Image 1 (spheres, rainbow, N blue to C red):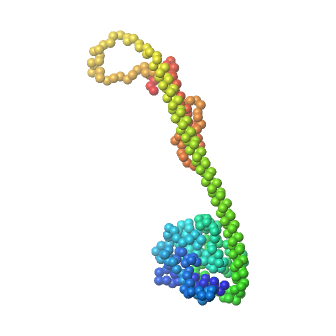
Image 2 (tube, one colour):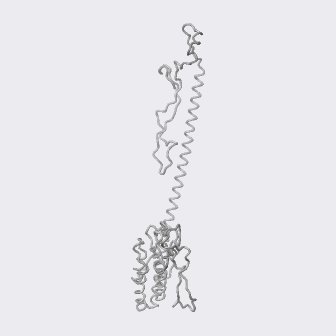
Image 3 (cartoon, rainbow, N blue to C red):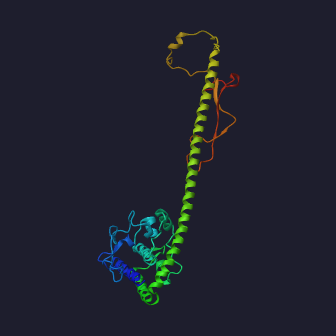
Length: 337
């Protein structure tokens, strides 16, 4: 355990230099275990007295220039504000350090076997953090919880983290034998695996529910399209019926010979040569013989021009049109259509 604590201290010192002591303060923005390398070779499984190096600064940015980027890092190590808004800060590096500390202590992969997008969503909505084993020493558990505060401004700085790790390092050397730590670590792995299994089960349930909702949405869309097609067909059929009714009425009216009234008085051709003879008067005694009116029985269906918003709006009243032959005696004289 003293090796792991020493490694945690080395990483914290390196990050403290980047944040506070470098000529230009730098945000790493992709701090994770795969970006921590050993300077010396490991011989005979001896990992003591090794020097750690923080690497992969491809995503790093100078602190005074910008704290925002479209996408960076890996979801399991990302802080919530990074996933939601791509807002990087010293606090987002602190969050990533907490995940790295969890890796050192447990020897596990963060969110092993869980879909990356599910992890991103869970962390972003402030409902998911890595499980801290129930028997984890309190100083470590407290430090990880502080690193994973939702508000990046209240996460501890690396200077404060180093103070806590220095105190922990002294306690570990005297209170936690190596055999006891390895036994405890094995128990942690089992406990963490059970928690991850529960998360995977919930993920499958949510995915199944999502698929059901998708199928229901597709089915609803298909039904709406079918109703629109039927509505269009009905509208076209009504226009066709109306056209036939008009043709029938026009044909019937054409069968009747017009009754021409005899002219009263004498026709004077000389009146055509008057000053205003080039003006044609408006028609008189015009009669309305055919009209198109809405049926008294309204068809309660959606209008073709209705909005396609979801959910669909309430159906509008759409009248059926009918061609009607007017009774001449019932119409006023001079009525225009």
